[in-house]
Length: 582
Image (cartoon, rainbow, N blue to C red):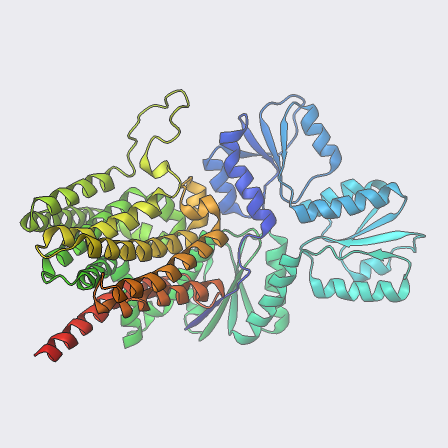
């Protein structure tokens, strides 16, 4: 089964802004926190707001207190004034594109123009726009209703920002011919234009298209209508529970798109559910391989194998002879810490990786035992390597276990902002990279009699750099879920665009520096081959930016395989060298 995910699927700019304002509101403004009407048309997001104490205000009381966020669709100016008069602090979360349409209507209404709004009469955005038009406003659903209106001396035509672009073009053509003195404004959001154009192309190449979004979302319903207009079947679902597995599992090509108010975690759940459908019915080699990938990733066995391979590569870079104890420690430590971190960080897994969250709920006792046993065995092996490796690993294990704990139980008069390590912005990304660097590069150097600090330092820099980029890349994929639970990863702090630029810069630096270290004799000749892993990681990042690789099992397995490849390259080079010397 081939799955294609639309590039524009999910939150548009206006919805993202409104959601972030709502998530930040409890910590910034006076409680209680309300949204006037549903902030966006997505029941899952509204349920999330309710969990965080942001509730919907249906009617304006005579007296009120607290904070009210204006919905992304906007509200009439009279409603805004009533909210302020009632005593609320009003925060405008209206989409900037809708605000632009409001401004056009407001300025022309003052000049005596009639205002014709193309849209759904009862849609919240249209109700808000009509409030700015006042008695001069006329709402029409389409060309037929527009033709029934009288001819006005002067008029403007605007569209609801999520209207069907092709239908609006037909309206513009008719107006140009029949009422050339009317002013027609292009007010359909460019995000809507791209979304509709993309789903049209997506539908042409797919057997069917799954459209993800709230049943009350107008722009989502239009996406489904466009698919059907192309002649393909559209499955409009709110969550993965609505999927028709019997109908979808027999298809060869499925397209997935989503409305502007659909969060990424819902899209990811739908994608993962569709991805698993062939595994339930097919028993061929491909299905077996996908099942194996899934188990290896969910249990963290594959990421631990990658850590062991990275350790093998860094040991080879340093020219050390004692390979296997340090490689074993790396596998056991990473296995233990990653399982424990996933167990203690399941709040974000609910949004970032729902399949992993379900897996950890189901097999929690076994995973806890697996983590404790591997952690203990790692310490035993490290003890056999010497006191320095043992105490280094012991200290790292304590730091890893304390990551999610509140080290300062009570706030100290605002002088200490962060009470746990996880609250420090970017701490997860940095600490994981440092831990991997220490266990794969520094620990072998400390244990070896022939170890050299310069070579160990160079190998440490390379390992930290590539693991940092790997972790930060996954953080970019998880940015929405991390933002929801208040987890300050690097991408939530500096944004995904800057994060990708930083990652590419670091990877290019590694590609340049490592061969330079090899040429200077700091590390072995293997450095010339170790430019391949960062090159491959740049390729994965570039493919993701171009939406050529779907987030899911395949992408995660591909990234972790880069670390496995580093060990394979090191093994091949050592074997060839041994053969040549023989």
